[in-house]
Image 1 (tube, rainbow, N blue to C red):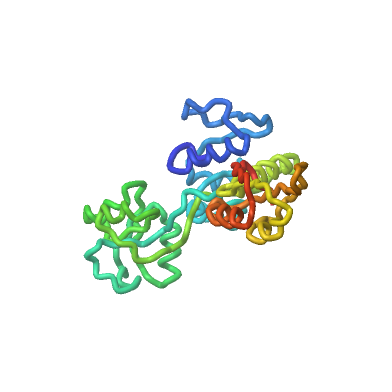
Image 2 (cartoon, rainbow, N blue to C red):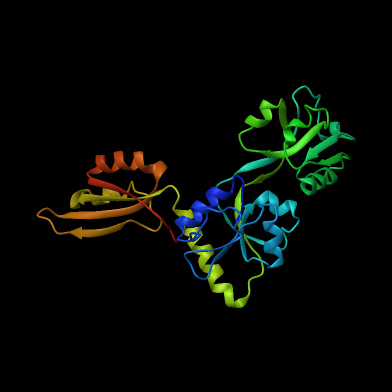
Length: 282
């Protein structure tokens, strides 16, 4: 798990939703932390070290950025088992707003500041453009302002930070987001690794999903079912009531709820109840 940075808290919340919580976490200096699962121990490390640790087999699963997997040059040694749906962004080439950019070749011979030395080097080499890569560990955006670089390669989420420093993205190198990766896993731990991956996957799958329950008169059932989405099909059960009535239950995307509510009521559904969903296993 990342020991700090923008991926740490979302990753810990995700594990907590999956039923895996550190038994203590107040001391950020703790590197090995037992969890509520006796067979799972959290190892806190720098996010950019995690791909190497997983590839080496020192740890068996890791949460890190997709970009950091490629920067560590271990994309062929680890498996990305899950995109976790947070920490998204793009690795971009950015230049000062006043730079006369006419294409990547206009950076020939220029200085490019970045912490993504391997990603940047491969990108420019593959396109036949020779640049001087300058490794920095932070505050990449300020380098052109200080006159220390002509361009940068950095991660961009909203672009606000780049604009604040007078920079304009001109090339996208890759898309990135938080991912769960796995490396070599001993046979004795294979089942544990599989369980962790699948329970985390079920939490990711459940994002934005709601459970919709409604009562539907017998004569309106066919019409109501025609407007409902579902994974495999709605669950329909006969109700014990004076009037022939059915209970219909369906999992639906939260973005579909306004349409479902309006159309189902129009077709005759009533007593609509909407519940949260913690986990989904297709």
